Structures are given as structure tokens and as C-alpha cells.
Image 1 (tube, rainbow, N blue to C red):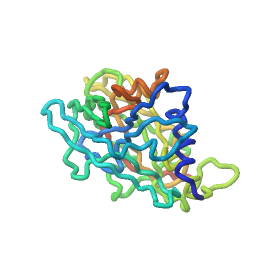
Image 2 (image 1 turned 90 degrees about the vertical axis):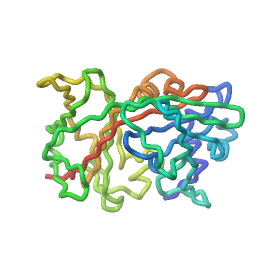
Image 3 (image 1 turned 45 degrees about the vertical axis):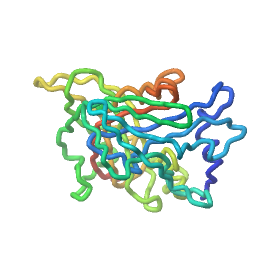
Image 4 (image 1 turned 30 degrees about the vertical axis):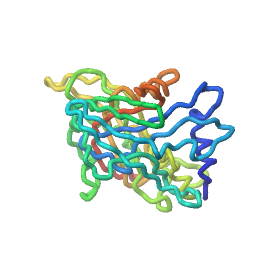
Length: 299
């Protein structure tokens, strides 16, 4: 049931700690900013450094004393961020980790179409990255989702998921990069696997939700789409896939149209160097996000 923090960092950050891969230590930035949303603890931006896996300590990976801020390149206004973590004193982890920098006053609210630069100052190093927030989009109304979790949430039979198409109206005909995130809202002890031969419920909290990725409770899919022209509008048709819903119950489905930095980070050779970070590695990107709710039922 428990996981020791140092063991977790060794196992989950090997890409950033393998001594043969790097000839020097790099500052690492990973994170998104979202249109019309503050950078909260939940939306935090991680700032750390690569380290030798053979001599790995927690303090070697986290740069909590770095100076981190974001600049609005249109107005030159700066927004300074604060470090936060939820690591227990005994370093025994059972819940999802929150480690990174956020805006405690929630003054920084990204806007569609604007370009922002994140800057990290640590000792004598300056690392930065830029992203332009994608345009807004509209999800065309359907009967399978609601945008407010306090409304009556409609149900979808698990056998009909593959038949459901979400239509998204976007601003132009260019290729769009989407992240679709499926997050089960049930607690671990009330979650039932859809396809599981050996047992029908998670064994424990960690079996249900990895403390970093959130998998299998949280599943993310990264895809690219070319819109179709329909009545002089640009429409993306998104087919849901049964395999992306791993549990029965209520779901929050997030649709994100993102910029290219995260896509390049995930899909190019040595992608850690292609995520838009100058003088460092990782990714810094922006997204336009909309959230919907549904319920997956056995029949």
C-alpha cells in the first residue's frame, strides 16, 4: 500500500537520471498553462534538475529555491510563482503527488491567442520557454455529456461507447493537436473494472491511481485531427473509444487543444530536447480546455 518517495523518483524519472544519457545536468520544466484558468496547485508547473541515478537523492531533483515567473510578452507584465509540495514528512506516499510552482494569488490568467514566456533562474542558469495559447473551441451539444457535474449526468451503455461521436467547432482548417483525458470520479473502493478477468475492483488506492500519472483512473490520449468544412464551419469529429474507459461509473472527460511543444516532446526523437525549453529539457505548453461529465453503465 505504501511507496517510498526516493524509490518512486528512481523508477519514474529514469529518463532524466540515466548517467549515460546526459553529459551534464539539465534544468527540467514540465507543465501546461490553460486559457482562462489560473495556475493552481493542481495545474502546477514542475521545475527540477537531472541527476545521476547512481547517487539519487530527493533534493537532487527538486529546485524549490529557483525563481520562477511568467511574462506576458504583449504587456511585459511578470507573474511570480511559489513552490509547493504535498510530500508527507515520513516520505511515505499513498495519494497523488503535487510538486511544483503555482500562482498563490491567481493573478495570472492566460488568454487565447497570447504568447507567454516562462523563466527559471537558478544559481547562474537561465532557462526559458514560450507558448502561444490556442484559440477557443466549441463542443456541439449532444445528449451523452453535460458541462456541469451538478446537473443530472446522462449514462452511456458500455457497449455503445464506440458509436458516440463528439463534434468540435474550431476556428480554422489547420491541423489541431488534441489531448482527451478520461478521469473516473468514483473512489477506488467503489470502482469496478470494465474488462478484468481476475478481479473486478482495484486492490488498493495505488492500484487505482498512480501517484504521478494517475493511471488507470486517469487516462490521456494524444491525437492530431484535420477539421472538415461543414456549412462554412470547421468541424472535428471525435469518436470515443471503449478502451479509454477502464471503469464503470461517473467520468470527467477533458478536451484540450494544445500547442506543438508537448506533441514534439512526446513524438520526436530525444523529445525531451524538443519541448520548447531553451537551455534545459522538458516541455512548456498551453491549452484551451473544456470539461464534460458522463456516466458509464453496464447496460
